Image 1 (cartoon, rainbow, N blue to C red):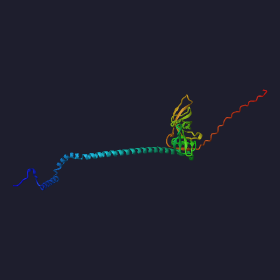
Image 2: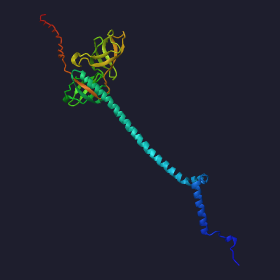
Image 3: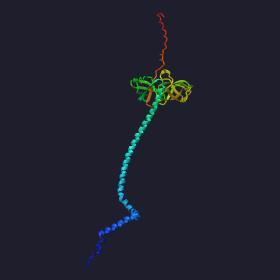
Image 4: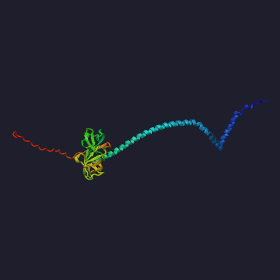
Length: 303
C-alpha cells in the first residue's frame, strides 16, 4: 500500500516545474507587452498605486538634502551679500572720486581759458590749506619766492579775482582773500564807468561797496571788474556782482552788497598773476611847514 504525506506537508510542483511555468509566463508577458501593448494600462495603474510609497520612502533623503541646501544657500547668500555691500561701497567711493575729478578737470579747463585771456604771465598754484585764524580769510598756496611770487600779486581763478598775495616764503605764500575783513579792491562798473572800492566783510559770500553816494547808479545784477587804479590788480578782471542796493536818506552813503564771482571757498587750483605795475610810485606826501612862532622881546630892566 502506497504511503501519501498528510495535506499539511504537501509541497506542490517540483522546483523545475515551477521554473518552467514561470519562465513561460514571463516570456508570454514580455511578448504580449512588446507586440500588443497590453500591459501599459496595468503599468500606469501600478505606478499610481506605488507612487505614495516611493514618496514616503524617499522623504528622509529629500528632507536631508533640502536642509543641507538651505543652510548652504543661507551661508552663500550671506557671503554674497557681504561681497556686494563691499563692492557697493567701493563703487560709491570711485563714483565720488570720478565726480571730484570731473569738477577739478572742468575747473582746470576754465583756468587754462583764463590764462589765455590774461595778458600778464601767470603761474598755476595749488591751495594747501586755510589759515588757522577763524576770523581771517586767508589761504596758503604751494608757490613762493623761489617761483618768482611777490607780495601784492593778484590771485585769480576761472571766474574772477580770488585775493592777493600778502606774505611770501621760499616755497609757500599766504593769500588774503577778497572777502577778508578790511581787504579793499578798486573796482569799476562797466555799465556806466563808475569807480568804487569793494571791501570784504569777513563772510565768504558777501562783499560791500564803501562810501558810495546815494545817487550813484549801481543796480542789482551789475558786474564789477578791477579798475586798475593803483596798479595792484590788472584792469578788467571780474570781481563781484551787485545783489542788493539799499538807499536810506538817513545815511550819507548807500549800502551796496555784492557776491564774489570767484570761488573764494572752492577748488584747489588758482593762478598767480605776475603783473608788472606800470603806475609810477606815489609821490611822498609833504608835510606842511609850520610858521615859526614870533619871538617875544626881552623886557629891559628899566621897563
